[in-house]
Length: 522
Image (cartoon, rainbow, N blue to C red; front, side):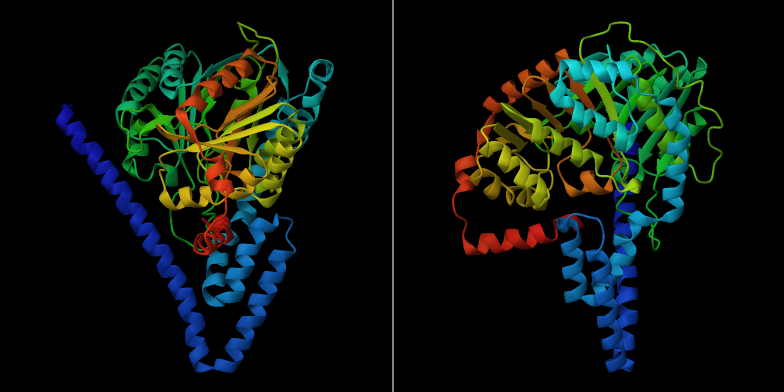
């Protein structure tokens, strides 16, 4: 196929994906309009009865939301919207707010999780060794095992990549050496240069008898590929599944996207981090300046946790196709060839179980920090609880620093992110903006002891609505390498702490207040 034909096809894929997204958005607004119109039509025919009924319904729904076991930052926007604009608020809540409580889908995930959990057994000797070596990290590790089911492992191979392009090259090399299976799960895949070589590798591996599965989120990839992409892969023998297709129907769980990013090879090597498989993540294209992203490579028994996470998502999402009947060929012990010191714990966050594991891991690390706590995130849209905990850490003498983008990918989210600076800066948290461009890495490191790297942004979508994954590293050499990467990042940033610690104009304060109020809905 000629380069010119490939280029035309890529442009068509992108155009078709964007048109599909536009159609979806229009359809959603039409549905909201229909629901609102039904309410208003009834209001015109019988004003008093409809008005009273609407107010009672709005009050009851607001009361039900208030009673939910969720942070106030999530509940208040819905309550305000429903009480102030009942027709629109109730319509939106029916379509989006209730989406996380689809019983059938939740039951499918619960069933798969219960089937896979017995394969993930905690070695109590490893847990005891952590208690002896790093007692301050025992709590967060115990929390992950209790709430998500993923065990702690010792003597695991860990490699940290400060550059996504470097991580991708290592990933492709590992895929070339695959003998049994390759599983790929990504929020976004772009059918462009970054994907072409991967597709060639996967095609060759299928011919060699390797089982290949590709799993991607429809919304995350909608601007990059069209619906023909999955069919193309299937024709090449690559099993493909699209998560949560964008079909505008009532009660579709629109908020719940698969934001995970991982590749698993033979159950012995796994890659995860902030990068998707799209050109901008590797600076092949640069729409937002230099794109900073990171990742880790894991080898050894911990990869079994990654494999179990993939199998859970794959089988729960394939509602119309037969799932796996046995897992023994994918889930068994594979010790790392090159073991390193320290402890590693992969964890996945599932919004269906209503346990904010990603946020709670961050909160645990904030609480245990003694000397320093460095965080890098593309978005900073956090609850009052997390904001307060970060401020308390700074007030007790911890050097708390947060790195956010210098060039935004979404301007309104950038303004929203900046609206959180004032309180943090006044409490002593230092804020840095990454001058070269957009930082998409999601990492935290503290006290030369513990670090996380994964897919979890510090925003409501990642912390409450999306399927996410992360990797907790304790006492590993990778922790030191992550801290060193932060030390390289800070000189490239502009510190804006003093600028945002000062007072704001009444107009700016009001605008930020409105943005903050509806932040959980964005």
